[in-house]
Length: 507
Image (cartoon, rainbow, N blue to C red; front, side, top):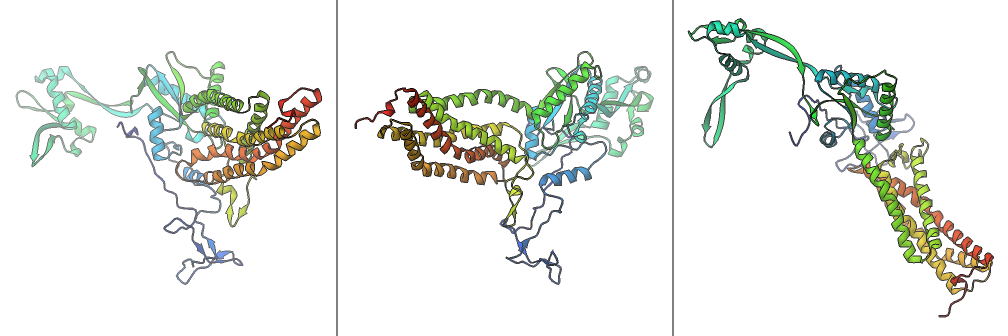
């Protein structure tokens, strides 16, 4: 339907995970009495756990299950059914969105287009076998549409036979239609409601080929003739569903990526792999057949092209605003160095999230790695949006320090290098507290986002990671900007270049 693109043949299973620990009605962990010597929970005479505020929470998951993804892997292993594919892990609404965007029931796939169903099915099956060889592709999740494989009953009416009995072909078709599909003959009125009345054979009289052959057709003289005497009924293989795009027949090859892989990288590797096979003539496309990759990665490619314009534009606008403030390209560049420092901090944090040892310790019984959802992060649109937000915040400390440095140099007599250094140190001391407050409040505000697990967390957490790492390293701006500022002024003093800040101005 327009609201639900899932086909009738699609098998959808909704799995609700049990919580990791026993919880109360408010979703809080419950603590139970624990025997540290025996290393087991204490139970009463009925075998039930004993509540204890000083005890430990009771874990429902098995020891080897650490994350929800581990549960999914176990489900995939236990639920392998011949003839079906291990569908990608998608939320119900997310699955519908994916199908509405690409027409496929998977985050990524290949669309094979061609002139006939038989040809595109053959090519799709070949691509299925090839994609299973790509290292970054989950081989168990690769499946091609079996386009031609549904059994059909074909009723071939013998025109010479019906002519001998004086029966018209339309009469035979009407009998078949009424017997198998049914026909509306009237409408019954029940108060304000109306119901159509259809007539057709009972199920047991039309569910087998032999039963259909015994359907009676009336001749003009009243003779009842079995259908098998005037028609031939055969089983044929035909299409399960006929799909078309851009006036061409299409079949899908669905696949999924392995954990830790980026969608765009996986698709690029698959494209390169198929291209190499075609060049080596190990895979040939029949005339009129083409294939294209489709899925969520298309949105990311479009977003990356947009960000390739937006990111430089944002940096230019920030630089322009800073220039309006300081009226100097050099000073603006010094303040802008804080963004470079924060940029490096964001990438360092992304790297740390990919390390197994990062935050692998417990505080008050809570594992920090689990709390902050530490796992390898791929560069995505959400990551770059997080960097975009970081750029605007990272220049704050540089503006605060540089503004006071300008004021300090104006109010003091700057004649020697020592004077410049004293003014720089004084400005640094005066602006340490405001800079630390700005950075600390930003970092503290990002912690709830990094630990969130509700709806939208899969987008918000990657956005917060570069901002958190950038602001953590951005503390160095309190040292980098004053040092660069002082170096520039010392250089001008050594060369004897005049500067309006070197002369004490009258009030």
